[in-house]
Structure formats: C-alpha cells, structure tokens
Amino acid sequence: MTEKLYESDAYVQSFTATVRACTPEADGYAVVLDRTAFFPEGGGQPCDTGTLGGARVTAVHTRDGEVRHTTDIPLPAGETVTGTLDWARRLDAMQQHTGEHILSGALHRLYGAENVGFHIGTPYVRMDTSIPLTAEQLAQAEAEANAAVRADTPVHCFVPDAATLAATEYRSKKELEGPVRLVEAGGDRCACCGTHLHRTGEVGLIKILAAQHYKSGLRLTVACGQRAVEAVAHGWADAEAAGRLVSAPVGGLQDAVGRLQNAETALKQRLAALQNQLADAYAAAARPGEVLVVSADGADGDGLRRIAMAVTAKTGAACCALAPGGQGLAYALAAAPGADVRPACKALNQQFAGRGGGKPAFCQGSLAGGSPEEVRALLTEIL
Image (cartoon, rainbow, N blue to C red; front, side, top):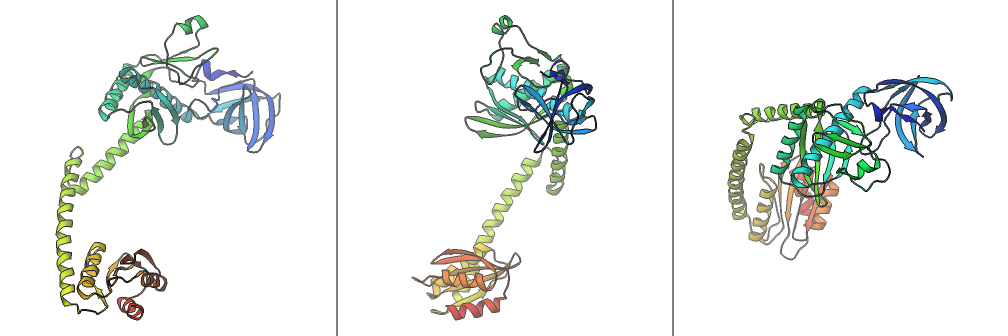
C-alpha cells in the first residue's frame, strides 16, 4: 500500500520514493510508488501534476486501493525517483477546498443547507445546495465565511478512533464505514479526503459569483483565494468600463441602466408610431389590386411588417417591403387574402442566398444578395 504523504502533511512539495511498478497504458504509463505526495483525483478535488524523475506526471488516480501516477515515459521498477509537485496547482486546490468547507459550514449552520455537490473546476468552483436560498441568505453566509477566514484559526485534519467518531457530529454527503478522516475549518467539521491549508487565513477571500436554481436547491459558482481576488478585480474593471459608457460610477450602474432602458422603451414607442405613419402613407398611395414591392430605407423588421400588411389590407394584393439590413436586404412579404406567399419566399431565398419563412399569409427574412430592382422583377414575375 502506498504511503500517502499528503494526508499527514499537505505542504510536502518534493519527496523521494521507490518505483514499485510501471505498466504501459493507453495514455502513458501507470507508475506505483512506495510513497507519494501526489493527491489522486477524488472528492471534488482535481489530482496533482508535476514530475517524477525525468517523467511528467499528467494524472493521478486511485485504482484497486493503490495510487497510480500516469507518466509520459516509463520509470524502471526499483528505481528511486524524486517527485516534485506543481505547487501553484496544489496551493490553488487547497485554497478552493478549504474555502468550500468554510462556506458550506456557514450555509449549514445558518440555514441547514447541505452541500450535495462539489467540484473544483476551471475557472471556478461548483457547489450544489440541498435547499433554495435567497440572495440575502447567500450574502450573510459569505460574510460569515470571510469572517472565519479573517479570524485565521488552525485547520485540523485527523482520523478519530471509532468511539470518538461515534460521539462526534460532522457533515458528510453519505454514510461512511471504517476509519473516517475529519477536517475542522472555520467552525465547521466535515468528512473529507482532500488536502487543506494549515490556517483559515491562507484562504484569503471567499466570493460567491453566481447562483442559479438546480434541482431542489441552488448551484453556486464560487471562487476562493487568488481566484476570488482575480474575479473581483476583473468584475470591478468591467464595471468601471461599463460606467464610462453610461457616465455613471461603479455603484450607480443599476440606476443608469434603468434610465437607459426607460429611454429605449420611449424610443421604441416613438419608432412604432412613426412606422405606423409610414405604413399608412404607403397604403394611401397604393392602388387597389396592384402587387407592390416598396423600398423603405430605415425601417426595421417590425416597420417592414407594418408596411406590407397595411398595403395589402388597402389593395387586396400581395406586397413586399424591403430595406437595407445586415449584409443585404431585409424583407417582409404579405399575401393577398386567401393566397400563400411561402412559394415566393422560397424563391427569394433560393435566388438571393436568403433565409426566412413564415405562414401562408406572411413571410419575413433577409437576403444576402440582390438589389431592390432584382427582387421587384422576380416577385412581379411570380406574383
């Protein structure tokens, strides 16, 4: 059985070990050592990477009770090698995992929320709660978790004897048998096999970045340590950039965006009124029974629809309204009463590299090619 150095001291960055076995596999070589500081993937925490002698360690997993290191080149059995961890990756994992314990503990202590899912991904950590929580509750839990970080108390990892374990309260996602490793961090006690920091202060910062409903609870997006610092810095820079666009400081963006939305709504209402007037003007100039193809520069899709429908209602004949849009022409095609303009729509799309469709009475789309005159000629022939 491999001696797991990471269980007794998560800060071991380099070690020596003897190669017990090395077997070829599809993605490299599976190397088993007599001792290792490489953490195998498990419990939501990714595996360590680094080097063993001259080999690169690309993955670490537990199989049949043994820790197996996937390397890019073989290592002879019996050879003594030096293992070196990618310490930045390990430290990041310990910050995320310890921070998750502290935040999960706060959520459980305050609201009885269980952590039913956890994964240290890239770029953020995923946490699933057993119950829904409000934004105010999440903010309170985050505040208490960061207070525990600032308190800078020791993180304690230990395996109690059976009697002590039976008398000890702790969080666990499932029923456990045999020896159980417990981790105490920031007022929380939880069963866990992962690697953790020595003190809560080393987490630095815990930040809930997003929350969405998931099954019966919430799925949280969380960042801890340097990830949290970078996320806050990037968010602040983004808010400042947005603030410059709307002439508002960070902290005043919500009101500024609200004003922009109100102004946009007023403009849309004004535009709709103007496009109704434009549609009425085209309809007034149309002759009954005449198929009409009109160019309405400046009209948007809704305006083209209004024009085509108004003209058809006046003339009783088909009408196509066109306007420059995107990389070509936008069109709206209204059918005479009881007619079907879908064949004409299909012909337009085929002839002028267009896309769009609709119902027998009305179709709408856009054309990559063709001029208004070419569209008029084709429709006059078809309709």
